[in-house]
Length: 100
Image (tube, rainbow, N blue to C red; front, side, top):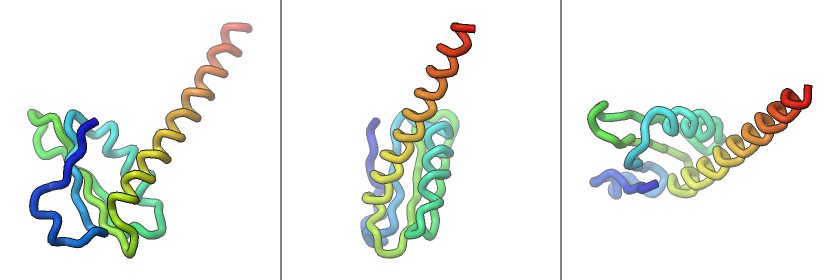
């Protein structure tokens, strides 16, 4: 996954950033937004896919006090935990179904 900052964003401070995810879309954007928007130190979190023909997603974080990059890293780690838990439950249920 390639991530970069949106040019010109450096003037808005460390707590407000827009990140550009290459080769990503609504699938990652919506899941990540749902997790990050619940953090107490987040004022705004949202994403957009600028154009369907472009394979990229813009992800915006505005926070109070915490650097946006730290919040993004925490969100990605928390999303990974959710995905791991979902896979574990799915595999457990598949095994239970196959035994019956």
